[in-house]
Length: 401
Image (cartoon, rainbow, N blue to C red; front, top):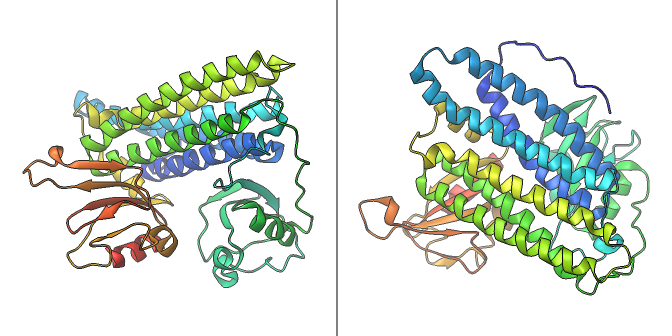
């Protein structure tokens, strides 16, 4: 492993650094779990490369914040910002620990990939071949996601990362791209991009009676911890105590899920020939809990009544994946229907992470919140929805709302 790079103070935009830290942390969660579920050394190595980038970002942010604190009032205002920085760093470290489960062969069942639920979209890494028909063309020109059913979630070029590339991003030979999609779509796209076949390991025998249940639990923990991070940033953006309390509830649920998963792993260890082969599952559960704890730290300033520093709210709003809050209008497309009936995710590309239903009280504290809304979630005029996705997707959603 390369030694850490020297870091020296230089003036940077704290807002820009926080926005990049947010995007990097969210990508790291996806990549680290994909590395484990797919058993991919290549994806795990990208996690460690991004973790190194995150270390540099958090040092820059801390130095800038220390330079800005000149009085007790400054310290009080900036303390939650330091909390957000520290939480993003914890997420990064936890993702790195998850990736090392694969790279250091700490111990995972060989059949995990075979047991992967059909609903999961894995992330794979590909190097762009100079002779690919995609080389030299922008994602918008290719109409990449619509044509292929696969999304380019990040591009690494000459050591620099482009997170959440847009329609104007052009692919160049030698780029490393991270692709997300279902396997039937990934295979042909991977071959077109890289010029090499997409190889899938032969299915392995489970060796454990209910391995599918364990993989389902891993996916659930990943989704819940990721949701906690999303809602934590939403609580910061909108200075919402309600959302911060939802983060606390999710953190408690992840703790309970981790405890049950560890118990399952210990029971399974008695039924396998080599119990050490399951050691990585315990590491995975512990790292997942760290991510949910970090989400709670992001929203801690809101929970403790310290409010949100404007620089954090602006950073969340200006990150590559934005979080928006919209109110369903009377007679709009979404009034009196469900998320599934309007295929909101497909039509806009936005993921609805929470819905708030006013109860007529003067205080929004009395409103009803639905976190993790599904296709059957009904919407009515006056409902407030929180959604996450691209700016273009946010504009499409606003038209529906």
